[in-house]
Amino acid sequence: MTALEQQLQRIADGPSGPKIGAFFDYDGTLIDGYSAAAYFTDRIKRGDIGAKELIETVKMARKGDLSDAEFNDIIGKGILDWAGQTEAEMRALWQRLWLAKTATTLFPESWKLVDAHQKKGHTVAIASSATLYQIEPLAREYGIEHIVCTRAMIRNGRLTGGVEGSPAWGDGKAAGVRAFAKAQGINLKSSYGYANGNEDIAFLKAVGKPSAVQPKPELEKVAIEGGWPVLRFPRRSRGPAQAVARTVGAYAAMGASFVAGLGLEKLTGDTRRAADFITATAGDAALAVLGVKVDLVGAENLHKYRPCVFILNHQSKFDLFLMMKLVRGKFSGVAKAEAANVPGFGRYMKMTDIAFLDRANSQKSIDALKPAVDRLKAGLSICIAPEGTRSWTPKLGKFKKGAFHMAMQAGVPIVPVVIRNAGEIMGRNDQTMRAGTLQVTVLPGIDVSKWKPEELNERIAEVQQLYVDTMNHWPASEGQAA
Image (cartoon, rainbow, N blue to C red; front, top):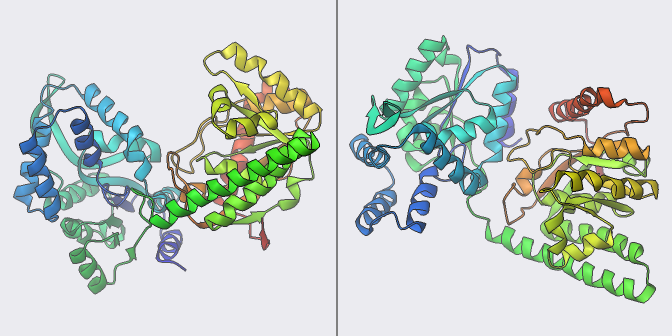
């Protein structure tokens, strides 16, 4: 077992309930790097930072470990810059930075730890020297209610430029965690802590079950001496050189398959045969070059119910490559209208008779279901992500009705494809793909022929719960590899 798997097992075997706390540092622990970097990068792009301030900031960042006084000076200057801003303006700023930069640096492994603690009913909190506005977007995404952090002073609805109390740094963070635990009735001796910095040693010593995540040298030394778990995760802030090379190779392999498929179409005049050739060979080639293996449960369900509507949980662009490998042929789908103009890939999508939707026009979106239904009736299967958009984490978004309407109108079953860890291969906005083993379960087809329109919301909720149950209780591998 890996160190992460061992820690997840310790959590699963340990006590449950809200009297157990799980405290997570933010920068460097839940995300790869520092959220403030996005803020300074944004200011540089807007020409809103002077040369002197930039030089001082870079010098301090290079120094690494800071004293309490130095950190207080930095955080004080940062919050002073926000004087006069409303909380709504600050939240809008950091939400924009989250979507543009920070969310792409989430550690999937840390999400697994948070999820494991939540399933045990523990009181999960983020304990960070960062400000509330920096942390809130991730807390919402992960469903974390409690935040121990540096608080900006608010008067008359606006930031004053000052700090309420002491910043949550070093001993200040440890004190904040102890105060929070006392207020919540949490037993710190039975609680967990996760952090990466040397300044977090005092905080980690405040809990009974500390773990060092991506630890800096001094923290690593303390962790080893104390017998604490040491967890290391692959970097997310930048793609490893090998991942970049594999990604380029994967796209090249897919491009070669596409060119070969166009040749087959020209030679035979059979567009569908050419599209199926591209689908199967490109999916196989891309995953082989990437070094991605697929641990597949329920392989028989990929063929047993066709034509059907394959639905899948959607976390990244990689999901499409996976479905090409699994479905292999005789399928179509739906996509946003602008996808038709993507060089090369748009041509392939047209070859597979994709129904392109104009999301700006709701009536056109409704009308677009008919050609998709016609394709189902003609014997083609449809692949679609009912969430409608990619998610930052494996947490499911709400399923929309389109896929289910298609199946009901065409009289074909729904076949759920549950993808467990695609985000570890490629995150939502990642441009590179990593090697790894992808876990996929294809569930038996669901007959929708007797579904009634008035009960559709309830039925869709039942299907979504199937995904939740499958991901929480993953079926044993059958030794199948796709």
